[in-house]
Every structure is written in C-alpha cells, then in structure tokens.
Length: 198
Picture 1 (tube, rainbow, N blue to C red):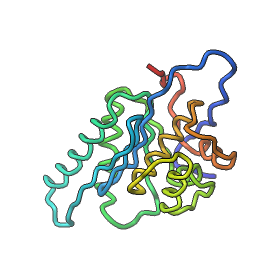
Picture 2: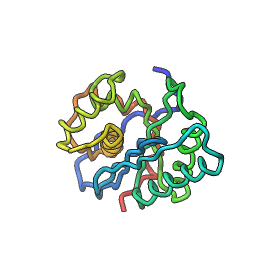
Picture 3: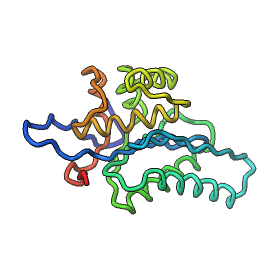
C-alpha cells in the first residue's frame, strides 16, 4: 500500500521483565468545525463555525482559538497521535484545514512532544478492520470495544488514534484482532527512543 509518509513497522511485543511506566498519549482528530481530543482524562470536542466571507483576521483568530484549546487540553504528554490529511477531501476550506493542522503540530513539536501521523484509512481499519469504514461505523466500534460514551464521531476518531498510539507502545487499551492491528504498520511513527514515559 502506498502512503504519503515513510512508515515504521509496529513495535515488537515487549519481552518479559519489568513493565515500563504508563504512557500518556493524546489522540487528535483535527478539524475546523469539531476537533476531537482524547487523553487519559477522557474525550472532548472543540466546535467552531466560520463563514466563506470571513476576513483573514477572523480566520486567523478562529484557528488560533482551536489551537490554544487543543494544546491546553493535551498538556504534557509522551506521544500525540494526529490524523493525517485526507486526500479525498476536495470541498470546504482545504487551505485553512491544512493551516490549522500545522499550527497544532507545530505547537506540539515546540513542546518536544513526539508526533505520530495516522492516515484516515489506518484509523478506520484499526477500529473496524475495514479501512473504508464510514465514521458512524468507527463510532459504533469505539463505543463497543472501549465501553465509552461518545457524543460525536470526532471524539470517537480521537479515541481510536489514542488507542493506536498506546498499542504501538505495547500498552493497548483493549485486545483487537490481527487484521485491525495491521493498521499500525501504515502510520508514520516517531523514533521509539524519543517516546519516554515520565
């Protein structure tokens, strides 16, 4: 499968011995209309609205508002898993979505937080076993597997992204079938040495 990024194989199962500390992982489904955030403290969503005729200042303020809330909610974590861009999205404010994505990723990097980029199809495959699953199927799978009450698919996506990061770090939130776990191989992971449980 061709991906936009270089990929690293999933981490091997940890050998017998002392278990490492618990990792703090955040999952971020970045969006102009509803960014989903999942951390150890739970899930939340940052809803905003805009108009096509918004000025540059209004658009900038909207993106800054989202970025600031996201970075506050994330805090200091060991790994942030963000959903990568969807290359099938042709409608809406593509330019602003890309700008928001980079604002948030830049903020994470400025804190020296390692960032993993999860393609949308990998997120869907990890959740349901099918990379082409719709968001409603991912929401259903997330609620069933993790016993979570999730008001929106944005929060479900964020929870799945967090679960993938924890699984890559050998601390899965729940058992998943092999076909689902294979989705970890299609992601851009940081160097393992950069991720340290504190």
